[in-house]
Image (cartoon, rainbow, N blue to C red; front, side, top):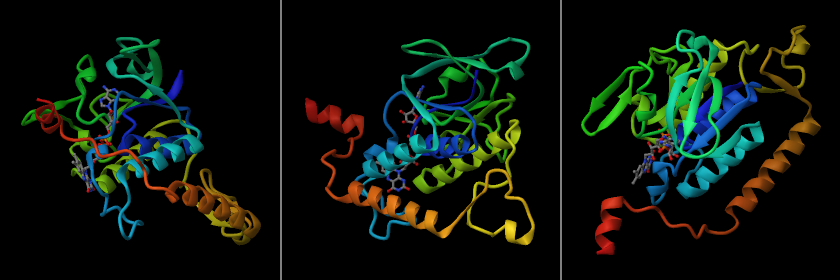
Length: 248
Ligand SMILES: Cc1cc2nc3c(=O)[nH]c(=O)nc-3n(C[C@H](O)[C@H](O)[C@H](O)COP(=O)(O)OP(=O)(O)OC[C@H]3O[C@@H](n4cnc5c(N)ncnc54)[C@H](O)[C@@H]3O)c2cc1C
């Protein structure tokens, strides 16, 4: 049984997967479509991009980062989640998808804005607001069912990319803390930061020397140079009702 299955490979799900995978938890992201962010025309309020960034490029880079961290991906819509053993949710969950074999995981993160229908077999706490359902969660994204979490817009977070990403990271950290992973912070520090004070490098942290730092910087610059070299041909996805009316 894998450690974490994340339902939804949009903004929150990708951020959560980067944290859980980097902490050594076996992480699978199941995605059944495209992020709502694919409808954006120019992402201009995500810190770190002073003149904005193409939202589809941002999603591509976040997916690449999740893969680099060790997360794996599967295409498909999750249709149902149930405990492996009805009376023992601590034994994990089975996820049925619209294609492929059922998937098993000890922790499930719902990052699947706007769909949480597949969680109805579990009493997680769904709340209707207008035409949408939101999941009730605590400060770490934990639902009423142990082992099931929610991240991003579906957890009622403000409808902004940086907030969804930050919440995904926070929920990923809650999963790490609730699992057996030996973890302190996900930090990369200069060589000697801990050890020159006679301390062990804490779990989850890494000390790197200057040569390694320069090599990582070179790799990072090359990745970004290639990513931003050419404009993307993909256009934003239009709202379905506008797209439908223009087909008539
Ligand atoms: C037109 C538009 C413009 C926007 N512009 C901006 C902006 O300029 N700045 C800004 O900060 N924010 C913007 N946003 C908001 C931003 O896109 C969202 O707040 C953010 O994407 C929410 O992240 P999320 O991870 O919760 O959901 P998403 O990014 O939508 O990810 C959800 C993922 O779950 C998948 N999924 C859903 N159901 C299932 C299922 N059953 N099984 C498997 N996968 C499933 C979906 O396919 C999707 O990939 C905009 C939104 C729209 C609609």
